[in-house]
Picture 1 (tube, one colour):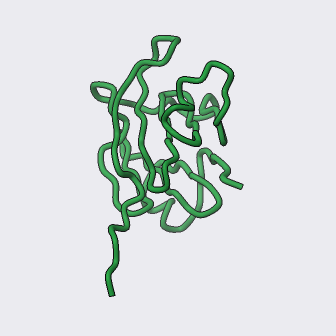
Picture 2 (cartoon, one colour; picture 1 turned 135 degrees about the horizontal axis):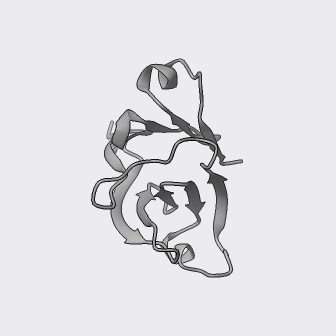
Length: 123
């Protein structure tokens, strides 16, 4: 049997949003792109859709204004990734499941699926 890598994140790059805010693009296995900024999470169909001013290709968007802003270092929000886990600066994390991308403040909460801070639905 031949098993491929389980990481969902295949590449990342930092960039600046049109409002001057730093952001990071994470290419996910299958071609979609997750954009992380201090105040939002957005999932796009592909990398070309990220820059589309009409929002064509936007799959889901969630505003993080009800949570404390995500922190970055030199534009990078992601510190590590494995399978569907994405570690963020400040010990926060994202979990990618078949139905959603969930933001948690700490690993224990993510492991027990409690105290979710934000959700980006995938359905």
